[in-house]
Image (cartoon, rainbow, N blue to C red):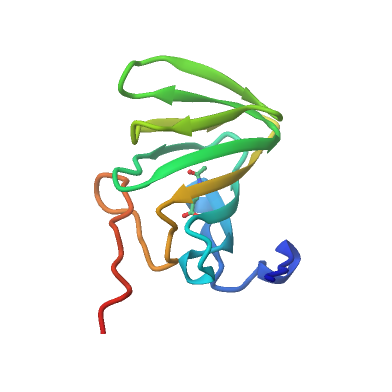
Length: 135
Ligand code: 9YT
């Protein structure tokens, strides 16, 4: 059994991003944990606007704090987000996340396939698939 606490990940290499990027993500479970998915506790900082495109991953995101919106860059549609909202990027949808003024958004994110922890966003905003099984 794996038992892990968010407070123990803060300030380690499991905490990525930063205020200057508009988002901070704490990787609760990664590929190496062997679950077949990764789980992240991600904050979109107040007033931030972030464009993401997970071309190689499916992602479900459940908002637990704050308010904001998501724009689907494929359709142009914008949806309001609040605690208790889930969105699933079932078509690898390119999107923009915005946290409203005066609040951040905190969300629990699940990735399939799991993030290994070594990805960096490429020039398109995607995470490449990392093959960490090679010798
Ligand atoms: C909101 C969102 O897409 N979070 C993804 C997790 C974050 N980009 C990470 O942990 O790399």
